[in-house]
Length: 368
Ligand SMILES: Cc1cc2nc3c(=O)[nH]c(=O)nc-3n(C[C@H](O)[C@H](O)[C@H](O)COP(=O)(O)OP(=O)(O)OC[C@H]3O[C@@H](n4cnc5c(N)ncnc54)[C@H](O)[C@@H]3O)c2cc1C
Image 1 (tube, protein in one colour):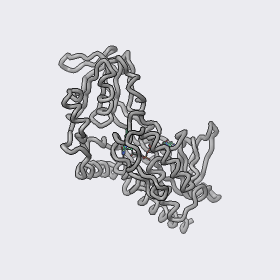
Image 2: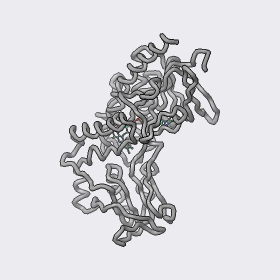
Image 3: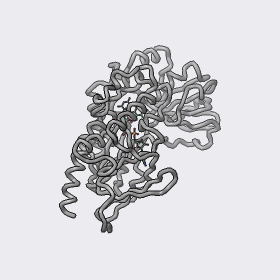
Image 4: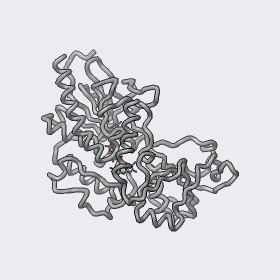
């Protein structure tokens, strides 16, 4: 049981789009950054997961990156950023200026290892430059994204593969695959982006997907597809189920670049293989494709390991989250989770969650 007062009222874990957006609204609602709320982030630099994205992902080839709330005060916008610049650099730069402008005092590289219940308060344990630290707080906003929890499905023979298994989050540049036979797994835009980049670099590319690809006629994600994708995610989050893949709800926009790739025959998906052998992959009908590398563009899961001591997980595999708040522990909020896992969703989460945090703090402080 905690008897002394906590170090702070809110700990925000993660300084990506979601954590920064929550911080912006907390400050607007009167909380003092660094005192009333503390932001901890594991990344070595600014930019959230974007700082780790591959060089060839340009502002112009990403889906739309929405501006953080209040970014206009700095006179910058992703809308007017150079479309040819690497998204990783532009986002890192804009977030850095944003953090400085709003004086968020983000603590990094602070890796949160656990959040524990200590009676009325929560204890957040983290390492900072190798040193173990802790901060006590009334509420926690988890905004840790998914980049640190890549998902690779299991297929027979996977450990016997003599080549290398890659995941989207290992991919740096096409040159790493020069002269190799590459199998790309997954039905989303990351898989498609890799196939297009590797076209004249790899010895061969083979595309496999568990589901037939739902190419949308529009060149951009249309509103209806987006709404349906968000609804599917929201339904799963409210039911405490593991979150389904975003692309299963939205489909893949048929941009001019993608359409040209389809016409050149680079984007012709095959069904999923059945097993992996040391030198390639094999389908049930006996067909074999030699492979030196398999790139798994098979998505991510929310990064929640550090919350395990709070026992928020349901048997269904997920956490029950409605309107950004945990159903099991109303002191714990989830920003950027499920239906909020996009830059625009993270912005909306910021406003919604900051208001709820303030309401929860007043309720809890009145009852202390
Ligand atoms: C390949 C790819 C491309 C995408 N492209 C787009 C796009 O074009 N447009 C769009 O709207 N969305 C896109 N998305 C979705 C994207 O994930 C979100 O838009 C947004 O960047 C997520 O923000 P976030 O703050 O939730 O997560 P992140 O940006 O991942 O930020 C989470 C932060 O939490 C930190 N963290 C994690 N765990 C801990 C811990 N234990 N302790 C301390 N800190 C921790 C991380 O270091 C990170 O800084 C893309 C996703 C992927 C995977």
